[in-house]
Image (cartoon, rainbow over all chains, first blue to last red):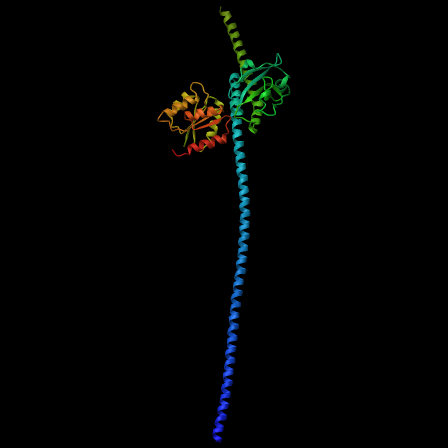
Length: 274
Length: 124
């Protein structure tokens, strides 16, 4: 009986110990669970912090790329502006080149001959083809009468252009003062135009000495207004045409005188023989 | 290398147009003083483009254009008329006869060069 009691006691002790073991095991399992949860949390946190770092990295890269893009855009705009500038300058240089070519051809032609009629024809050609005048006249000063006499015309009969007293009207004043005259609106001023009232009057000058004028009465219908090259041409005509006209007239006169003198000398030489 | 025939009675204009045409890379300029002279040059040289005035002595530009268009050998040569006649009916008349383009004087050199380049580089 005593032996049975001792066995029962031992069984209780064992059972108690087993229960404690069970409790301990359960505690361990709970702790394990808790620790696993903690690890999972930590792993998640680590992963999250990695993503954030990546995002920060990407954000930095995007910012750098954006800065680069802005700088490139700015550079592109600068280059584009420079390009536009160059294109405008190219057009300007081309225009200038063409203008110089026109002026070169005009002055080359004006000084290509000493024949007065040919010089006059070249002046008319320049005014028609390069300036675009439709009706105009070239008048030269006659020193003896102090009048401007028409010597060449285009689009108008020479007999229709009156002689003008030096210093009178637009033509006479231009000749006297040596300053070009331009009416305010060259195309719409047609109503006020007459042989005494041209739309443009250019003095033909050798230095300050005026030898005549070019009076323009109308422009070709397609010519709406004067360009910069036209004013350059007017300046060129004022100087070069005057020189060419003056020297060709002198040459023609001296040729004529030379022929007369030569004939006279020939006549004198022939006399003693008779 | 394009051969450009400039038909113009005014020496000043002829020189000016020739001057401009020489700026077209590789071009050769042949000059004629009127329509008859132009026909002679056409028979002796291979011409790729004609620049022609209208008002000329001996044979005017319109007559020249009609003769060129009537000739099977020259009929495809592009012709640009350069003239002081700026009226619309003059332009229409020249184009109806067979001119390819019509440029009233005073000419803008850049415009002329652009026009000529367009015809020279046009596939035929």
